[in-house]
Length: 223
Image 1: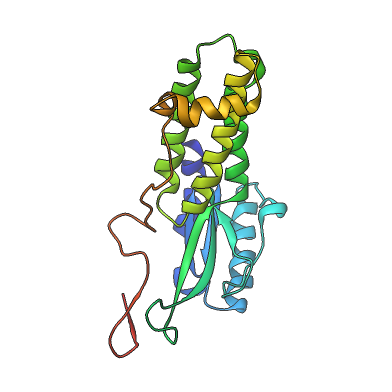
Image 2: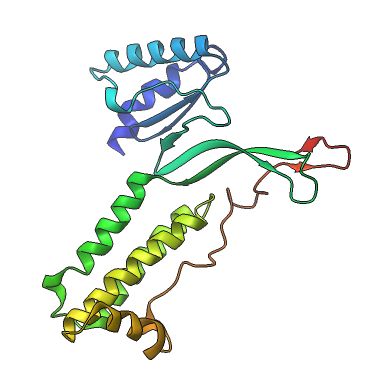
């Protein structure tokens, strides 16, 4: 809250027409510009406004990115954003270009680290049901945030990590092999010990909106 109060000065002083559209969440800032020249001017303006507040941007996270198909993209608020082009399924001559986003590598690492922390060896004294409940809580929160995007593949990767860690928990508690732990999760427990699954989670780019532009009969795109 204090960060928003302090940096509100930037919002008030920003000229959208001259420097592009500024999007700020606490101390994370993204500026969308129409040209390289405008981007350079926007960065200079941002540095000046921050300097007036006794601040400076973090150089490791400050850069100008040209958003184009085949480009590297950028991370913002836990998502990786990238412009992609996909050929039409029924007519390969048609293609759809849209801004895709999925959970960033950093967000993936944070999720894996959190699951690893909950399933570490020192917590084997806890009942498996307690560990499962805590893991489920993390999965629900993580999925609720990242389901607005194109994160289905990454959901599968997180679930594989969860199953691997839980299989280890079961194996160590029973002093058996990891394969035994996988067997308990996959076959011996009808509900997988109560572990929820992110597989098949419905994803969308943003609430209540189509996930891409739709080509009409003439090949033109409409929103």
